[in-house]
Image 1 (cartoon, rainbow, N blue to C red):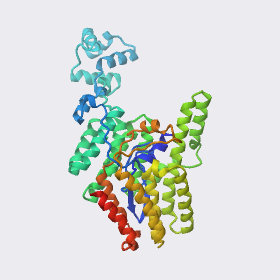
Image 2 (image 1 turned 180 degrees about the vertical axis):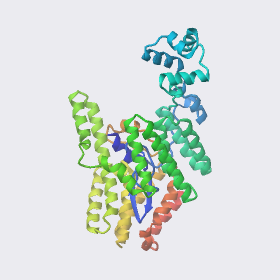
Image 3 (image 1 turned 90 degrees about the horizontal axis):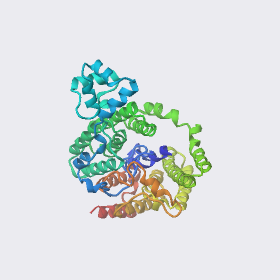
Amino acid sequence: MKKLLHSIFVSEFISVIKHKIITPVFLVIRRSFSPVDFFAKKWNTVRLIGNPLFIIMKKRGNTIEDKENNNSMDRLNLSDNIIRLRRERRITQEELADFLGVSKAAVSKWENAQSTPDLMLLLELSAYFGTTIDELIGYKAQLSKEQIRYFYAELVKDFARLPFHEAIEKTRTLAHRYYSCHAFLLQLTVLYLNHYMLAESEEEQKQLLEEAASWCDHILESCSDVSICSDALVLKAGISLWLGKAAETITMLEPSSDPARLAGQDGAILVQAYQMAGEHEKARGYIQAREWLDILNLVSDAAISLALYQDDIERCKKTVCRIRNVMEAYLLEKLHPNLAAQFHYQAAVMYAAVGEEEEALKALFLFEKCVDGLLRAEKVVLHGDEYFDRLDAWIEALPLGEMAPRSRKFVFQNLQEAFSHPAFEALKENADFQKILQHFAKTDT
């Protein structure tokens, strides 16, 4: 189930215009991530447009410094660790003292937190117990889910209001400070994927992507959480693709992406297990989330299909017809306007490319409706309805919850790029096309 999440939320309002096609992007929720955005998209990432700032734990501070000072996870735990490691070795305080050349009383004081060993003794202790000094003293900088969300929201604001390089340096500082917090590092990767395109030169953009890839490598090498590692692998694969390393991306993803693998049946088995165990509410919540994600993946894949089958216009028309029916049946333009906008946009590109201007404009009007709703809403979040009545709790449990991945400022920039797509060249003088452009120009002001 967590896999499904990432392809929905890392890049919600992102759509990269490349090779004359737009492919839906959802990163950070590859089925389980967080958001990336719609018009800057390059593969599959996640989230909505809007600028909600969820200042979590407000009573304990409103600045990044406050949040860091309040991080209870950074406390050292040397005394307890010495006791634990000594008992695991089945040695007495006196035996440990003899090895280190200190008194038994000194070891007793360490274990009672009355004093601490000096640096050289820490080195000897870590070597003796076969652990690192960080592990020995109990230092493992970690952030809670609320803190991760807070930092991400603050950094999104920084990218909108500060010079780009200042925002990047703040991000790097946090990455360095919390390098062992793999969940946070994963979200910083998502943050980079949402903003790297703001760098002035292609070379700098490439460097930022490579830096994000190095974070993924670190997660894969040192993290024991299977779901986080799975997300990091997908993000790294996407980065490799954006860097033009298609063969590397295939090597990373092909083994686990075979539709025939039994892993694809794990959800159905889990639901049946919940039922057998009498956990009916959990089964219902899970199956709703799975159904929801299957619908989103269907629409996302259909948008990619329109780009892949540009030489088969009849097939593309059938795809548009069927997916529009699905979106109407599940009220997708209301529940997930960002993804609906992505599909309408790709349909417009497809129709414009083959000279069917009327159908292209029809798709653009639908696109306009979805994006307009996103931009005008005070707060845009993913949510359920009377049918998906257990979806809200599941969405809240996502790594970034309802948070938007980027500010509206970037949305407008991406809109300009979207309408400059080569496929729309023949529509430039069309009165209806001009009305759409003028409408968003007014919205921007």
